[in-house]
Length: 288
Image 1: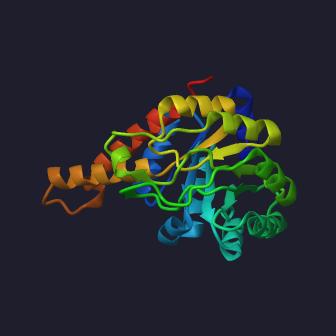
Image 2 (image 1 turned 90 degrees about the vertical axis):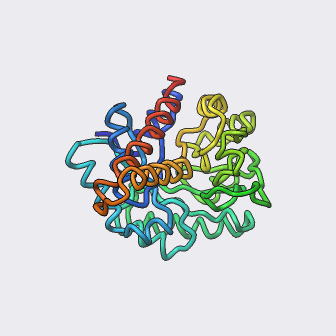
């Protein structure tokens, strides 16, 4: 079985993207893994700091490793949006496959310095862990909002080159028209996120580094395909997963108002999430 580094290289050569989906419980993990196996595609599981507090850092690592070991399957775990060096060390020691140090709210200079420290810590623990850095700003909340977050700041190719050179990260998450969360109009299907494809191409050409698209939920399908062809290698989907989970849970509760067993109430949530993941993974591999 290929490592995450090898899987990422393969995706880049084939002009496809690895789907990255966040979880907060077993229902989402079950749905995502079932979808990935059905399509026979590698998949990344993400847990942000908040999600790790709920699931457990070592517990999340153990769950993903157990699936990878039992099924000999390329499923990988990312410590998504990690903001402190303490949490960086915690995830590295737990054996995550990738860790994102998110200093995007900081100035570029502060972000570079903090990311360099994160890289130093991770490399000292396990040189095989992929390290991701983030520049630009795309908001920070995976929820349905009334309007777009303030202060969105796009990434330039020059900033990307400097950041990678000075920090030594393996993967870069730029701001290229993407955004965390969904607006109410997006959630209703009345509008979509649009990406700056030309900007993605320039960043890729200048850095020759694997690129991650965060905040992918609610993005125009054609833009996804074009972004992957331009150089995006990993696409993050979270809010769509959470919306599907809630929609499925509400269905389960409505259909079985007197039921109290979670394993009987949650299957509709698993199915709703699975359909989202199937759709997204097919799209991310459609340029092949």
